[in-house]
Image 1 (cartoon, rainbow, N blue to C red):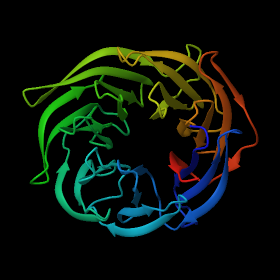
Image 2: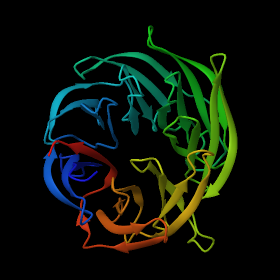
Image 3: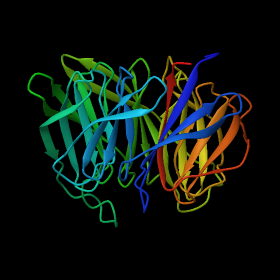
Image 4: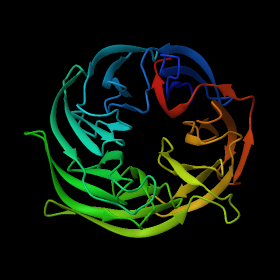
Length: 351
């Protein structure tokens, strides 16, 4: 960690500004960002790194865009590809970097695109539209794909459907570029599964639920080419005295996977958990205000000593010193203005 330099990529909506990705130099000692560059792209609602760390992929209004990451962390555009649908909200390459998977919130669609060895995005190989009716509330009456995440063994794709209150599980056919539905992980009715993450060893699955502000933890194993998930924990993202009208948002692991971070809009707080890497169970360390409105994402710095919160409604990033053992969160300087921030990713670069 000592001497390692980092940049941070922040994706944003572009209301009147076409620079949807901001690149920041990261000051690890002070726990702060300094703007380095801006990238021209419309409505970058989510970005992800390839597992080989050579490429970055982003949602854009017209599909998905690929970038080559330069030695200094700058981004060089490779190509853009359409997804044959409405703008996506989440994307992942999985662990093989052979395909790009895109979640469509607005049209309830999963899109699978081939990736080429040079990092460019190829043709669509599969498209799945979720169907059905959820409970009769304003936003949860039809499919809303909010997240796609591959199991660590690279055999299955988990697809969170916030509208239908479940996670669909698909077997991945790498040769044909197709998905086959094999399982459903059902959440509590009206809970709204939003984001999903796997532990570093792949044995545990974490699902944050937007509408009811809790995380479900599942054990995972593969038996005879079929996935098996068993719920082992349900834990709130809130304090007992939280504000009314809250929704859970972010779900991010620390770089070493020892801590898990989530956020609560309405309550405008960040929650941090210690992760028992052997059992997969979470222990809440703190749940404290972020000094901003609608923290859509938050992440620990790679040293686990600092935290940044992306406050979507107040158009700010706020920075904190954090002590996971003492359960303290102390603001460490002024906010940074950034319009409609969505997500943040840290990336190590050559010094």
